[in-house]
Length: 328
Ligand code: ACO
Image 1 (cartoon, rainbow, N blue to C red):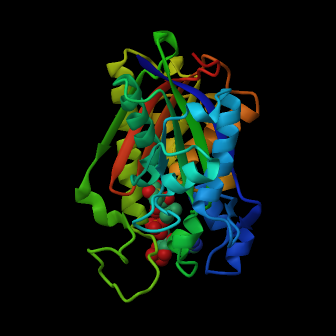
Image 2: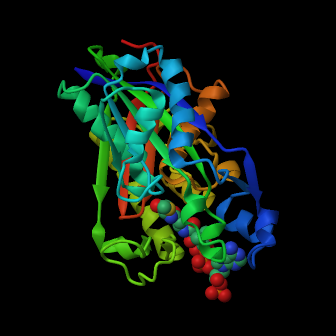
């Protein structure tokens, strides 16, 4: 049994936070943000809109596009670092309940911006082992709930949103997800963390748990790790970068994406970019980018996608994924 990537959906909240809005909030400029990151604006969820609500909206679209009846879904995995509630219940459980999926298995994955690729890897393993047949994977983030809007080093980067995909069992190898690579290195844990609120809290004074990042060091490790990971997955599967239809990197920073694309010799038309309009949406960024090329008509049945992610942990992952929209 193989696993195929059969549908995509995404949701972006309505409210736009532009660079000029941020100029009014912290000591920054549109010019600095654009030049250093490529970001022009990001979306911010309404106060009443939870991470699960955005995940549900994205999931509804992915389920409808898959042609599945929702009763066929037998597992929900949600990747998030901004869950509805820290620790419990999981956001996946809430999403499954809001969608009316019954009492199926559901759980969250915490792998920061690599979360969607980790979820894909777990869904693939469940399907290939024969334990599950139709898995809903969701990347959903309300990062605005864990951002310090007085910290100009982080608040300019992040936005809210969600993306979802249906991964299904198939016996047709030509439609199957080819490979997923995942890795982590806790030696770099302190580059990117939410230091408050857990058993390792550094300043557990009851304040909110905000993202803290050593951006410049993270940047350098990101370029190296993203490039190496893609080189490895292509070599191990005897593919060249020419054979990739869509390179879909985690949308953290245009300069990171450009450096990785150049190192791999990718043409501009192969590289998918949404960072200018959504900023960094962590685990949602890759499925939101896939949805973007789907809705603009660029993503066709059989196209080969190369996903490449990097995030807090540190974690990283890449995947070679044919788009297989017609079910099994
Ligand atoms: N506006 C104006 N100036 C700023 C801003 C800002 N918003 N932020 C920082 N600066 C200043 C700094 O204070 C510094 O000033 P100094 O030279 O007087 O000390 C100067 O700009 C340069 O700062 P750097 O941090 O060296 O700037 P850099 O070019 O590295 O860009 C950025 C910063 C955009 C954060 C970049 O480092 C980056 O994108 N890092 C990687 C982020 C990432 O990929 N994270 C992983 C995924 S996220 C996740 O997993 C949740």
